[in-house]
Image (cartoon, rainbow, N blue to C red; front, side):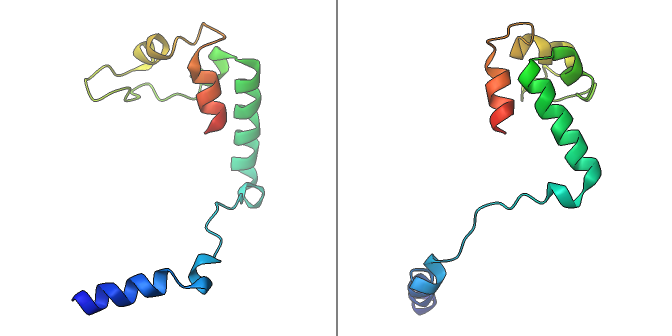
Length: 94
């Protein structure tokens, strides 16, 4: 078992392995429906348009592990009426 771990460690540190590119690839253009939705959502976030964003939030969204679920809790947690809410920058980054 120890020999296997050593062998895998050596293989993982090899130059060929280290040169592999593991960054995500944007394939949205190959799925027009998703591309249209993502563009729409990015526009909604840029406008800080809470109503547009809320129109696609599931009614039973899980907001925490403590049972504070639903759209009303989502709005209260993220303070969507505040244009400086961290929601806007967080979702834009995502």
